[in-house]
Length: 574
Image (tube, rainbow, N blue to C red; front, side, top):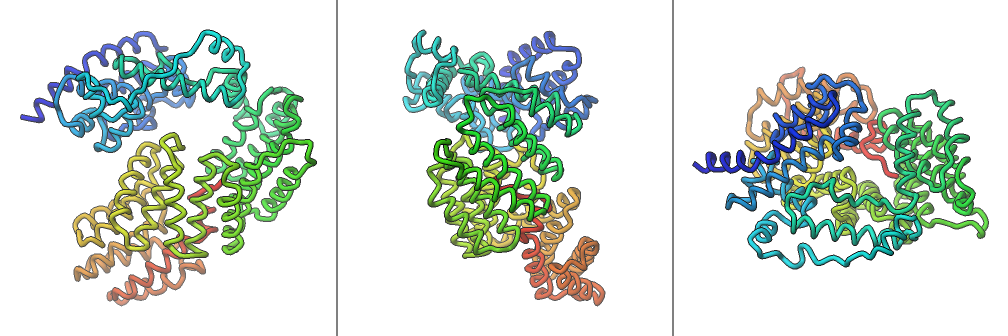
């Protein structure tokens, strides 16, 4: 009965949104129509993925998502979110269905991801929104914003504001939009844009993105010539863009990451003369990023030289402006380099200076990264409790605007750290948050790793059925992702669970499977002992619990090895 009622309410609430989707379909380019059709058919799929949509629509042109955003004002993913939340808001206003049921009806996996997405869109939780529709608007949900004068807008659009005033204006615009969304629930997001269209900086950011799309497939020498001689910017927009791209490209192709970081440095050759006083700081920052790319390529000598040059640039004579945030970055990256060299005590001292002495000189996201990295180093150089303290400090300063990938890594690390000290309840809370973020970022590796940690928590609580399901999902998923090491680790965790239940034949089967997973790397110095123990046990068809536990600990130490984590790009700290 309740299911039928929910479906009837959903159908009625969907009608207006479907009309709008069809209107959008009638005005987009022909190549976008199959995408609109797919979205209409799969709008409420919990596992909706843009990559799968493009594949099923037969789209091979990587520019289609950008074209979609240009024509409709949203990326495909944001378009789906906008439609879902528009329907959910209508259901909240017109029915008394439970909030979680509305969330699952429109395609969310649970109440937490639905409430978070809804608050980001409407500025308040779903239940507060429902109260506002009934005339009981919480005063702290949508405060009356400070109005803007025509003179202020004219000055802003002429590019005459300094950065602090521009940011203040942007905050006021956001407050106005939040208020409008309360007063006019059907307001579509693209109708009131709060992007910082004040001054030349935004214009040049857009220009830099377009230029990158134009040159990214060219030969590297041609790219260098163009950024050195053809692109003149009055802001560091192109430089900052190329630094971000070096980070993105470096995760997939280490040599390409080095090339793009070098392009960022090349772009400073054509920067406006008005920025010359900042040039040493820009060069220091670019060299620090270049050092990170060399580190990811395991060229520690080149990474060290780039960092030395970065520090020299930063210490250029006093008449040039010094950015203390760049010095923080240099210490942070040098600490990461020492970590890769397994010089843990030096790494700890460097990152401690960055997080304690230079904390006020960097952005919130950079400080969060530093604290996360400090937590990782403390797991080697200090105690698990110290590691959790640093991660908790990062959590305290993290806000909802922080990068989703950053939030994912933080809560993933916290979940793992809590398991290390046997704190399973806080670990479970972190797992739930991290799972939502992993889904949002479509980060398959994290999704399976988190399932494995969830299995460890369930096993510790005595819920062997849930533990078995989670650990099986983790090991199979990691095998699909061709990550034999982590798959072996969680397979051993499952074998230990079976051993405690005296399911000996299944223990033997898992042990044979682990031996096959480890065989290609069995000679590795960090894992050879575990391989030998398990190989002999499988051969003798008898696998003692102590052998499983010892092998798991050996593989765990191998998984935490800094060089291995650099090789698989599990974390990039810059």
